[in-house]
Each structure stands twice: as structure tokens, then as C-alpha cells.
Length: 195
Image 1 (tube, helix red, strand yellow):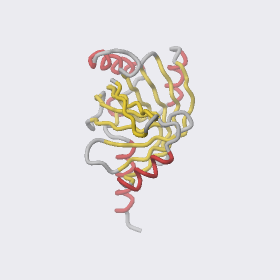
Image 2: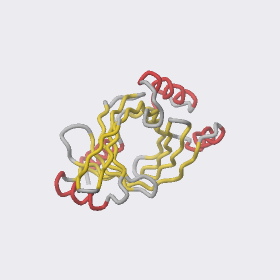
Image 3: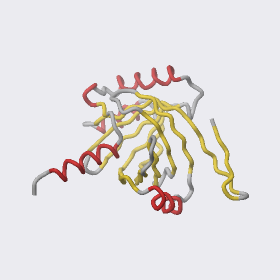
């Protein structure tokens, strides 16, 4: 689904709404995941050094992603649960996010900033991330999305389940929350530690 809006005469923004079925898991062996993806002819899109700025919002999550590959404003709503979960999201591609970051920072306030190194891979409509997040460790993500193919929620769920098994992701490896939530929790725990 695509929404068009014109903010300034002559400048049209595309807002695209999609569905992901996705998982995030701790990844004790990122090389195993890379090897699996290479052996299964996944397309490597590159390594993105990303800075995700999360803003204070009443509903869902709003983040501005700045990277050397991806630069987007992303709003999403997702239940925090381990295992495959639906995520309804809207995405605006931004050629230069700096001015928007300034406006959103002043108007909404920054909740947290997440820095990561992300390898991006694709097999068809399924996107794979191998992430290194300072202070948190290594993670793998699987996103089966209708952004790249006209598939139902059930079909996306089957794809996600298939790759969870293929990548040998165990139940105890699954992560229910976002990196922003993990870092906020770590900040709270650090503040509670005696000096």
C-alpha cells in the first residue's frame, strides 16, 4: 500500500505501509548464518553502519535511520513477544535525513539512539540481517515482508518459520523486544549498580 502526500509544492513524499513477519535472535555464530546465506544464493546488499534515533511517541515506535545504505523514517507497531511476530510499518525513504532529525528531535524529544553494524542479505522477499550492536552483542533477524511480494500473512509466517529452522535458531535465542528496549533496560540496570 502506498500513500502520497505533498508537503511543499512540487515535492511529493511516498509513504509505504507494509507487513513483516519477523524475528530477532541472539546469534552466537554469525559466520554460520553468513555461510548458510552464501550457500543458498542470497543476495548480499552490503554492510550498513546505522544510527537509529528513536523518538518519544504515544503509540508504536518512530525511528529515523541514518546509514550508508538505508536512510528512512520508520513508524511501526509490533507486539513484544519472542518468536515470529507481525509488524505493521510505514516507511519513508529519505535522501538526507539530517533536517528531519533536527525537527523531530526538537518537537518530540529523543528516546534513545541505537548504533549498529548490519550485514543485509535477501532471498526473494525475505530480508536477513546480521547485526553487531555495541553493548549488546551479535544478532540475526529474519523479515518476511509483503514489501517485495504480494503474499498473505500466513505465507509470510511460513517463510519466517522455515528460515528459523534452517538457521537453527533455538527458542531460547529469540528476543522479544527491540534494540532500543534492550539498551534502555541496560541503562536502568547500570544506574542501579552501586558505585
